[in-house]
Structure formats: structure tokens, C-alpha cells
Image 1: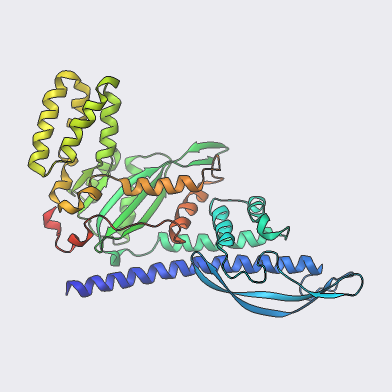
Image 2: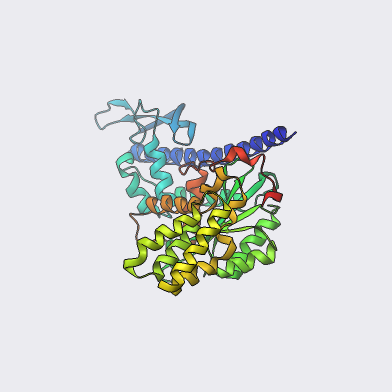
Length: 400
């Protein structure tokens, strides 16, 4: 019975992902066809059915052509036309965007998605596509249509029902992209919720742009997940933000909570004098990499006894985390590597930063959300299953 449920969940998730990737491919196909239309209009010196003096030739239908993109294959309707020069000589029109024998074009998709998803305006998109377009025009209306269609996909994703996702673990963390807002470039927090399904797969659940990382902002995100029927996860993995912790208690009282061990290590090292940092690091590792919970508690007791004398602020910082630093020991040992930190979201943030490293800032708040969503939806960011995912079938909420 369990196997059939798992298979059904996997099928539903696969169908949702396929549908979203198909929508992205459709958007890319539309913008390529739009560019081809504008390219042939420039070559002919006239729009479709337009009477124009000095016309450089005539259309004669379209041909269907397959093109392999990173997100999958698409069928393009490529316009056909004959050009006539001043001597009356005729030749067939050839696209500069899609040369005659090109059947695979990751460059086109990368340029369209990369610049567009970064919030690029018409000028920036035209510049990025210049090597491909060879001077062909790209209208503001083509860009506007592409923008509105991706926003529709994002809104559908943001409001979708989560009941069938079967989320067992939930990572919560914040990224800080530089965004132009209110006439200034500022680092605005984007709250990120990343779920782990019963199959071990990671899935992006929510993105919320907030004015500040407050308890109210986190409560809004968590309440939205609950309203979309996420269910109560077995474990939350997050940093030690006090506002988040209070929000969790209001939405899911008593839920198992794991404090990110990497965030806590950074806190400890920030309070330790430089000459003692290596020793603090080594003693801390004995806690979070212990063989079992009993060994971890013994290592923690030794840590506190030692550093209360040598550096009381370091010991106080460790005590602040309490039992939430060791929650992951209640779960299968094969999963400890994945459950003790929020590194899953950290890796997403690294991908995000890598894609926008040439930009000082994003042009708008919405551009930040669309970029993050677009990288995920288009398949440009891949997420692996958690370590020990095969043991999820035997794990149960009672084990937490």
C-alpha cells in the first residue's frame, strides 16, 4: 500500500514538473518566433500584408522546424520569404538567429531566459542577443508579452495546492539579493521554503519578499503554506532567528526544530578570540559529528565546561541553541548530513548569485522573485535527493 502511494505522489510531482517545464518551453518558443517575425519584416522592409514602396521581397508561407533547447525540444514555425535586390536578382531569405542547419540552440534559450529572468529591459535583452540576432530588431511588445506570461506561470506556482506533495522535512532560510527599491539599491530579504518529499526529493515551496526578516514576515509565509494544505512537517531546519522560532510556535506548536549547525558555528567563531577559533571549531565538531545522541551530549558538556572558563561568551552562545542543536539525532543516521544544516538553501543561493554576478543589482523586487522561480522552473537549477532518502519509508512522525 505504501509503495502505491509513493508511486502516485511521484507521478503527480512528475506531471506538475513536466507541465511547468512545458510552459517555460512554450514561452521561449513564442519569443523566438516573435524575433523571427521581426527579423523577416526588417529584411523585407514591410510588415505582413503591408503595401510599401521599395519592398525588398515577399513572404511565401512558413516551415516547421525542430529545435533542441536545454528545457526540451520545441517545434518552431519559421517564416519563409524571397528577397529581391536592386538588380532584380532573387534569393531565399535566411534567418541570422537560426542558421539553416542549426537544430540545437542552447545559446538562444540561455540568452532569452538568462537576461529576461534577471529582470532585463528591452535594451539589455537586445544586447545579450546581439551575437545571435545579427542586428535584427526586438520590440518592446515582444518583451512585455514574455514578461506577462512568465508572471502568470509564477502566480500559478505561488498559489498551487500542496496537499499532494507529502512534505516530511522543511528547510527555512533567507537570501539577500541586491535590488533597486524606492530609488536606492538595497539588500532585501527573500524568505525561502524548501521542502523534502516522502521520496527524498527537494522541492521549492515558497518565496516571499519581505521588508525585514521579522516574526510577522515568517508567520505570513508559514500561514500561507498551511492554507495551501502543506500539512505538519516532521522536522523544521532553520537558523536561530527569534522571529522565525516564535512564528513556528504559533503555526505548528511543539514541532521538532533543528538549528542549523553551520549558522551556530559561525556565531561561536564570531565570539571567540582569533587564537582560540581553531580549538573552538574542533570541540564543536565533536558535538555535531558524534556517533550518536549520547556521545553528542557528552561532547557538549565537555565543551561547556572548558569554554565557560576560557571564553564565557562562546559557552553562552552554545547554550542558547539548547536541545534544538541536536534534534537531528532523533532521525536515521543516514540522514544526519542533510538534516543538521540549511546547506540545501545555501546551495540555491550560490546558484542565484552565480547567475547575477555581472549585475550590481536587480532592477526590481519582482525581478528577484521571477529570477529565482525561473531558474528552478526552467530546470537550470537541479536539486538532489537528501542523503539517506531510502530510509524515509521507515521513518515516521513518532520518531521525531
